[in-house]
Image (cartoon, rainbow, N blue to C red; front, side):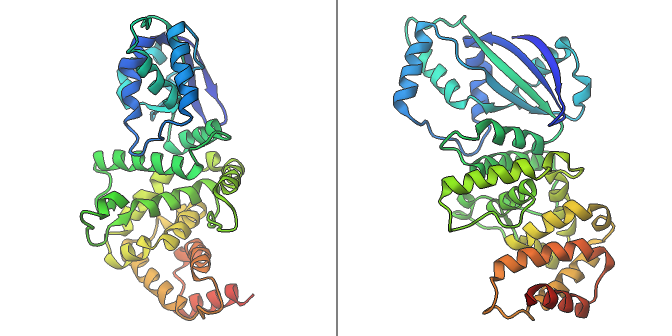
Amino acid sequence: MQIFDVQSDHVIKSAVATGRTTYQDAIEKFVPLIDRFDEQRKLQRPKFYERLKGDIVDGCIMPPITLAFVHDDVQSIDTVEKALQFLNENIQEGYILDGMQRLNTLKAASEYDNFCATRPIYMNVIIASKYDLLLYRMITLNNGQRPMTVRHQVEMLTGNLLKKLLADQALKSIDIISEKDTQLTSPRGAFKLSDISAAYLAFLTDSAHNQNARFIEEKLDEILVGKVMASGAIESDVSFQDIISEVDRFSTQPPARDWLRNENNLIGFTLGYKVNHMNVKQLTPEEFSELSDDFDRAFTAINPSKVNVGKFRRELSLEFIKIAHEKPTLEALTEMFFDLTAA
């Protein structure tokens, strides 16, 4: 591998390197990274990729592949030599942010007799300090492409973030299971991966409402991309990993864990914590558990026949987290909920 240049991306606060390697090296080192995603985008437009496969064998130059990494000390990677050293030492920890289909096609083309393994393949390398920044760039890279939706991209990177947290034993009080896992067994009190992904999408879009049956999926996807790009998520001092860690801390208390396991509550908690994290961090799990119990008791005062319960639960849990550090009484919460839903 060679690295030509290293620059700082001031938008996602990341180191960005450009370089190249050979087809053979890419097959050995980059192709295995595709399998780091739990859910893979199936090969699309087979006729197009069949043609690309033939073009590769005939000697075309493909558009660059984009590799991505998460690293705590991004600022230290400021020279070509350091970037190359980082890449060589950490390649197995990378992700393919753009170019999965091309790498799949390259692997298939390598089986042809006249395939030239020494041909060059160019690459961009993004080294970010947190997953949120990678996901922002992933969404902007893939915007306009189909069939991978924003929701699918969020689900993929959520799975990988959680796998890392579990591998690092950073989560001690919660279990997170995928839909596939629930077909076999469902641990009592476990969080659903789909609910965590919905909370992550709320975090990125700064919006509690990201599902709308009035829009077809393609139009909804355009709306979500717009929300992500306008939300300022990349400027936030809080990462989604911070939020999951706080959910884990509060979940030492079963009532708090059960409250947070509700998808609508979790979305509200995510957005509320994003703006009030300094104060929420001061609450003990016992205090939060009592407050969440009061929330549910106050919520029962709402007439479910007159409101969209899921919508209001998301909105009220957001407002609840904004003031949770004030330790409002049950009566104060009930009055606040009445005022917010009266209109």
